[in-house]
Length: 258
Image (cartoon, rainbow, N blue to C red):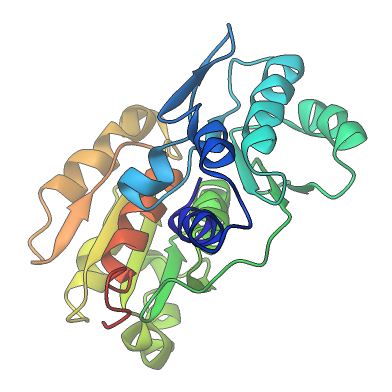
């Protein structure tokens, strides 16, 4: 249940359109619901401002479907994001949810039954160093959009051809928060961090030759960035970067002000 849904339910109780007992029944499964295979966190949106998201890797399509059904029982017009989902599982789920969208590059599935309300005070820009980094960048992009942010993306502008990056300075400097995704030696976030006065979230990817050690070289390079204002998430964690960027970009929920 999201904050606006709770406000609407309390207003229905106040005006008599919903009885107190009916309101209690709707809240019965807060903060979580035990469905056997999972404890579904229905309270997360109220507690953190971001809803429960299903991590698809390692789960069967049947398990994911069970969790989705539990979420929809609490809010039939709710929106659901499933991350790290392969094409076969996505196709199986789409047979049950005809309005679900599979984002192949991002390895995500979204089910959006209510219009996303814009929650950000500005925009989030997702930058990837190379085309090989796009899956992680796309995960960040889909997640940031799902969380109600205006987004832009800029792909294949790594330091091997830095003129590609410098040609887009207007776009880069217009963003409120930047997510910079890179593998190999992971140099791009430091370069971007030296060009802007905004938060930069660096995402190392597992892309690279043997000495990249599956992304550890990029991770260490980003952790040792000489540019101030650069923070780092885990290897290939586009989802986590987008969640952090969304919190940085979010309007104050109490006043509606920046």
